[in-house]
Image (tube, rainbow, N blue to C red; front, side, top):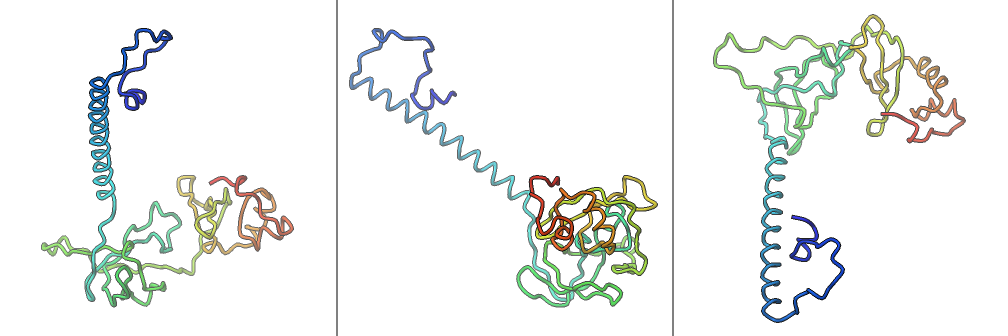
Length: 232
């Protein structure tokens, strides 16, 4: 159905300039035209409602269903915001645990009982947690969670900085790691990188790149490069 048909109730007659053949307007014709418009509007409204319903079903299916956790319940923790001893997220654990829920802070935030070796803040949003359901078959149960080095003494050596991008209120750098191939390159937040000298040297070679003000200001004289010049 064309927009013209939906608006006027009839197909456009392209090239028709002579209006002598236009039927005279009368009340019965007006009534028929009104009925036709009503039918078209109902048809379009029906399709619109079906489209809205399909969108809602799709949105509900893709939206994570938040669940309520109980104190003492076992959960797995997402490593999305956890830095382990591994240099690349591709080879890292996706979830660690199980650990016990220590306290419910509010509807979407929980304190988790963590071993002392994991030196991270023990409060997590529900989106970073999932219930751990132990299999009935003991042979299929997860072994005791291995120790995770969150702040290891060993540091991975940066071979090169390839790019920078803004993420939220901070910045991430695209890192080429010493001793690893291109497939292990990762985006790392600024606070993961301890080599400020390398960061300053990289920004000095790439003054058009956006970055932390304290570093960029030394090179640009206090001016931050335009966001348009920065590639994500």
